[in-house]
Image 1 (tube, one colour):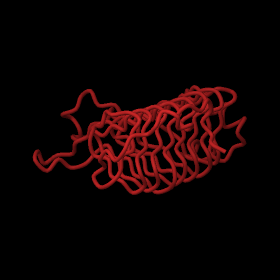
Image 2: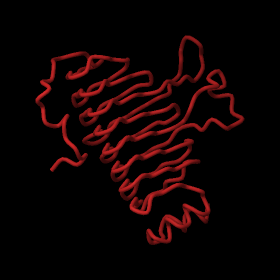
Image 3: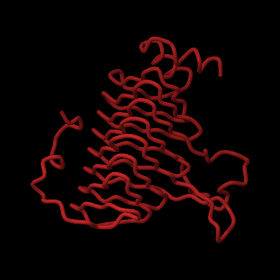
Image 4: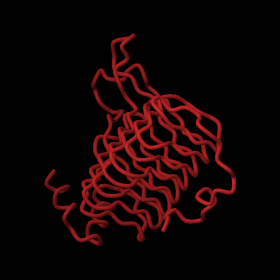
Length: 220
């Protein structure tokens, strides 16, 4: 714990060396982490990947950030690692507690990301705004036990502010999830706007919409 605390406040060049050689993380020389507590079991950061200040990432197995991906300020990323003696989730031997962020994808500010099961954020996707919750686990009232399921956010998607996305949900590629919606199941129709509680298909999105053909993640 003391080594982790010292690592957090070190200047980035020194912090990167400690993370690489002490914690055995794989971090590209052009990647960076701000004043954040990021300690999954495995960390892989591609070129220009960035984690901003005051984000916490603990108690899950793997964080993979592909080239030019971004995690903003004050996010809470946690989960339940697979290698424990706990009775939780023993009925799911294939469960993985991972967060995978594709190239040029972004998670903005003040979101809660529960990686008890795998969350995949596709390339050029944006989890926008504030105060969204991605929750891969819950109590299964029929079986009276904790249960979990993965979440998939497709490539070139836009997730509006203050949404809830539950385990087992999929937002298909080239789609938008409207603000304050609740996505609770798998959808498969691309080029679509989804919204509501629970989220439903609202309308189609024209293929001419420029957000979905951009070649870099950041939108000016």
